[in-house]
Amino acid sequence: MTDLRVRFAPSPTGYLHVGGARTAIFNWLYARACGGTFVVRIEDTDPQRSRGELAQVILDGLKWLGLESDEEIVYQSDHKERFVEVAHELVRRGFAYHDFTTVEELEQMRKDSQARGEASFRFKADLATVREDADLRLKNGDPCAIRFSAPPDGIAWNDLVHGPVEYKGDELEDFVLLRSDGSPTYHLSVVCDDHDMRISHILRGDDHISNTPKQIALYRAMEWEVPQFGHVPLILGPDRKRLSKRTGAASVGEFQQKGFLPQALFNFLTLLGWSPGKGDRELFSREELIEVFTLDGIQTKSAVFDEAKLEWMNGEHIRMLSDDDAVSYLREHSGPLSVSDSTLRSAWPLVKPRIRLPKDLFEDQNYVFTDPLDYDPKGVEKHLATPEILKHLSSFAADLETVTFSPESLEEKLRARCDEWEIKAGQLIHPIRLALTGKTVSPGLFEMMELLGRETVLRRINRLLKVHLAS
Image (tube, one colour):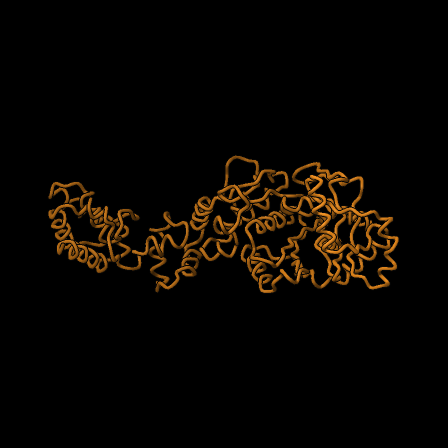
């Protein structure tokens, strides 16, 4: 399907939402799986809501995810003359009309509709009446919009995700193509651009499904080929409402700043509302997803965004990195810490199993780089309860002055001492871990001691002894 063309068309009115990013991913994967073309269009025709700087933020987010357009970026605002031309052509063809209804009149119509107990207000005009005095009012310069006349028989289509969908005639309304100030509306702009860009398949969120009958009607009125439409389920937050900043991070940029890998977020978002249909496998590379992606795998129910699962998946993708790439990744997110590449490289094999995000190393396990300033109170109460333990710790610190600093030698020496003192190894291991990390949980103690080195280990043990012997 080399003639398959899909697009992602965000409005620069906010940041790149993860829901939009997932829609872009589905389009990109479909194009790659079918040998088609993926293009990006910025829908910036609303001057009151569009912000130029946000367009670049969206493009930067797409680039970070590896979703760059196969062709030059299209900016919808460049085509306003084209949209106006098509609106007037629809009037000439008899599918649209000049509407002189004022804002006040529209508001009264809505109130009257509510008074009649109607579920919603749908504007529909008597075309014979509105056309009677249109020429005269146009000559007088009366302000007017251009509206499309809704097809009385309704619209049906076979949705690529949901199957057959139908809107009956009484469910449709006459909708505005050009506002009274001459600016084009979303429906007119998107149909013109999709036609002119030769878009063959439109994959977008379920929130657009009610727009589709209006747009299909426009295609038919202009005698243009109608693309295939597919509407993907929305992403919900933990409260099972539409995902928003109120319920957690919702923009791609926020996840980038937190230190998530683009390949992990790509993998996670692809599986949010889509399934390969084979087993329970969850970890995929971009190339593997291209191989297995089909529209049949898109589910019709909304998916819940589980950030804990994303963190797990990020950790798995981190462990797939080469050591060089892992060091570069950690360096990028080390923040104010002054950490050498050699230190990161040495620490990486030890901390790798515990890392899901860079903060797990630079915040939760920062003892790898800096001496702990305090100690877990429960750990102190449990593992430093008697003067005898502090005495044994002091004696073992003296042993560390001469013992070979390898995991094997350190463990052998510690266990020999514990046998000599007739105590369990854990009674010495836990206090040493507290001294080195300030915590009760850490990577393997003896491997960590080797990583930190003799000088650091002795300094930290002696500090703990000083603090607790004094107390």
